[in-house]
Length: 591
Image 1 (cartoon, rainbow, N blue to C red):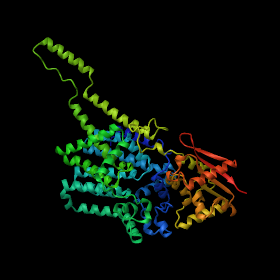
Image 2 (tube, one colour):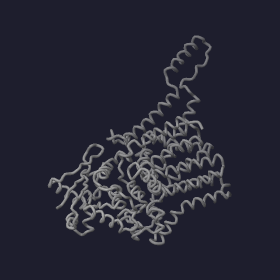
Image 3 (cartoon, rainbow, N blue to C red):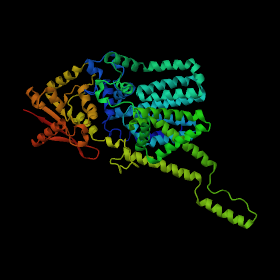
């Protein structure tokens, strides 16, 4: 097999771009919750607003090991494998999504090549490599980052089935349908799109036994989620949080998620999709995408129906789903293959048509007057030498669009400080806004503060967490407190994982006081014989959960930090990527 140097260059460029600052981006959103639970394959968030079987029963029922309360299990499993190889660090948390997007790039190229031409494949692949939304999907650690790979694999199998009518691809298609759904339920639009394709173009497939065998495989792969939801319904009267929201099931088990529901206004939801796309794509790329949709519809009307229907059916089904479910910017990641392929085909078609008519100035026609004809022809030849050809103009326009998107991407995701936050060059969903200093804090704690080798254990019972922490505190005479007004998502990964899995007495200051029913938890523990303490305080208010800026949690932490400063207690300052103070880690002893 001949090495495709162009494709290899695109893949290498994308890989370098996406791993460039992989260890600098903090886990401060849903990615922190996913990584925290994937690390120990343990569904627990230590909150009353979003509870899990571990809290309901005090242990983990057998069926609760098969999935998670708010999402299917596949991405958690993939992350678990990477953590076992690379460790519980940002690299282990992010690499699954980088490799997933890198693989998606390859299959985007194959889809473009199969449906249109190599040029369409190259263009789609390169555009995806430089797009800000792709960089965000590869680096943000969200479920969509793996889901998009199985979407691309499913579309590729779909295209191969159209071209070959080989039932092998029918089986593969349903396998990838199920794996996409096992990543996140939003992939449900794919089977719907394929069903529409069969109804319009391949009704005879409904008579094939292979279709129903493929459906059986589909159900078998989904069986962990099916069994989990049966167990959940039998014991709690509802399905998991994602399905409960979709079906309108209200439950106190997921109280904090009650606002997630199907939108009654479809057209408002559809408008939101395009508005949100404009917030995560450069203006030229967004306009090109709209043009590509119109061109795709035009080609279907002109007769090339089945070939172009794949894009339209997939995109239309996704739009319907997102319009009803709510088109948050993160959900737009799953549109990436369709966006870049539509644009890639449009640009390849435009390139082909331009090559049919190379010059703006036509060849001069002969005239009866030899002298006039000579002068006229010479003058037009001179003009042709000055005026760029259609091909050159097309290349210039394409270079401007691609360069703009790349600049938009770099300014949003990779610069230490963005040059501008104007929508023309800055994405609302970006990696640059996720560099607070949590990763630096974590490295310092592991290198300088935690005093023994960490032993990861999955707690089997709720009380096991407290037992290990108490044993540690008694053995070392040491407790770690942290400012529990900090970002709630981040605290699960950067603090809660050490409590849950490593048995460290790392306690939220204000919540610990409430749990014990005392005003001063440090005084309480010192009376029990614990003399050594650490306190982790968030100096930068951008680290604080917006809901807790003026809360009792923040006031308690600030008061303790001020008291320690007043007593001259030394601290280690942790700085963010801008060199500004982010955290203080105080160490002190009581006699």
